[in-house]
Length: 165
Image (cartoon, rainbow, N blue to C red):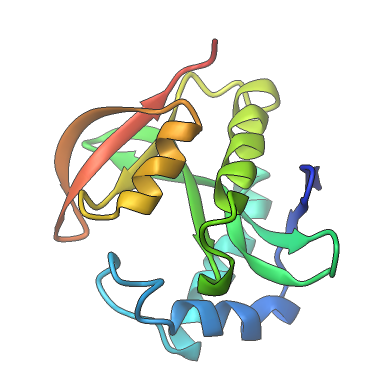
């Protein structure tokens, strides 16, 4: 479990499916993804994420507000293959009513630190649609810099990256 001032990040479980399904069904949250996800697609995503915990020892963790115990989204590390190279991405998604409070940045920073200090990643990346200004700000506040544009999931995508200090 990772901890910040306002958040706990813990492994997801099947008990989180309802919250995740609501987040992934929100058209505004999923605006820069190929499509919104119904409950079935969300369950498949959750299953893959649970497998990552076993296979890699990490994945996307549930973001839990300390003050209430409520799951409000997810943030974590996802293995990716980008242009044939293995990478580890900081991934984050947040229930819309919690946007603009710095929670995604808070979670992304602790995931960045975990990736460098515990996993010894040589760098961490974020794959972001150029029009997703909020996600770009989170990446930049986490110390990432824009590296290049590339196609990803059939969309133009900017690759951000950060290396350990």
